[in-house]
Image (cartoon, rainbow, N blue to C red):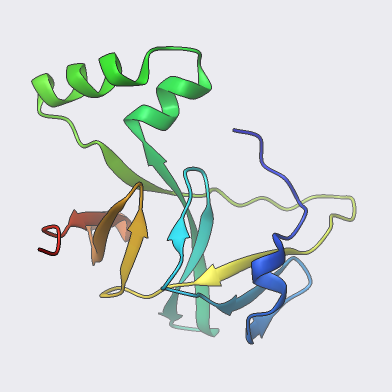
Length: 141
């Protein structure tokens, strides 16, 4: 999974929620399927600066295995046998740079939203240390 600075076409048509020199936050289209490695922003209220955003990246055991040329099916089976989570969202790190970078665009989701990812539906729940838990919802029948 290579991180690219090219803005996906679907984000260019979404309404802008907030804009900063380093990144732009747009309204997420929650009807579309999120992809492995896709990044998104979650708003929070800071004590000094008002509304700010934490960025997260979606991950999965199968996607990670595929990235490293391993068998995704075997990786999922092994993770299940160990009782490990199969899907997650990692909080992205931040850095200051001494050079210009292209502005990045992130869709905004909020705690309590339901997203589609890897053919399933997940409820975005708060976890400790500003993390997110993807709570898998039962399949609609």
